[in-house]
Length: 433
Image 1: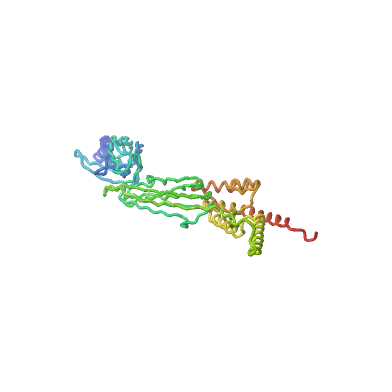
Image 2 (image 1 turned 60 degrees about the horizontal axis):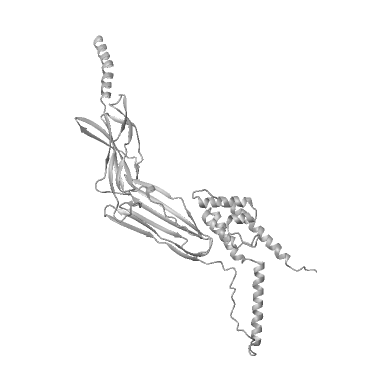
């Protein structure tokens, strides 16, 4: 009995590894790529490709594949969900794992998908050694068509559901130099990755400084259904007076179910920016030439005296004060509010407006820009703060805090007020001559 038991154990020790090795050697694997969509393939459409990994083994592990670059298209994996299946072929059972891929063609015509390199391991069963495979799919060709009504070379979004929303801030039609306008456009499209929604065209013209902001992009997946969401913003800062017209923006998309090219238009904006009324009306009422009549002699001299008094008062006020304190005070309040909110664009616009109320510097002119202002007073800390502000406006996403800038501006504003007080006192006649 003991001899029989020992013989069985020896047989098992020798036979089972040999059987497992023979089974491992018989494991086969393959990889293929196929089109998951039926019907016409359009440019801009999410075309589903199925990457299928197959093995006669029991399971998959250590799976990895590299997506190649496709000329004229974007190939990506929008969802990590896999589909596991089994199939019978030639009397054998094959295990299969399917990876759905998405390709977005950007041009019409023949499109070739290069081979995809795949590697994975598969074992015949529990406890058996895994076998490594490195495979490559066959190239795949697609025939993509351009939707009717779309010009060759134009980007087009192909989707069954497209939503668009926009806003202009501020909504007021009254604008002045230094103000800022913000256009915000939000779009969402079904079965389209957000990165494939085109950016907004940026309108540029003299007198309007355009600052496109970094877009907000997100992809939402619900049970394999993808929705791309993109929000863009452009800030325009009004640099000088004039008439401006920001054109509208046309968005078009192709509906593959209705076979219709649809469009939505974000309306543009037209506005006038008046010049600051600092010089007043230089023209006076017309006066009849020749000496006055006897009946109106006394009235003429009264009006003339009154006109001279008013003119003298205006001239004196121009010399003693460039602007009314209330205007300067309210404008600087806008600066403080924007800096406290760490809103770089609004702070930039408000400071430009506040510069118009500053007294003339060397040469008798007022600083026209932030850099010129800092240079005119030779203030390096202010120059550093203004440089950080301009960087935050020009490079969206840059972290900026307005605490240091508004503190420096308050100090400078106080110094200007003290200088005005000293200058006003020096013009007074001595009390005890």
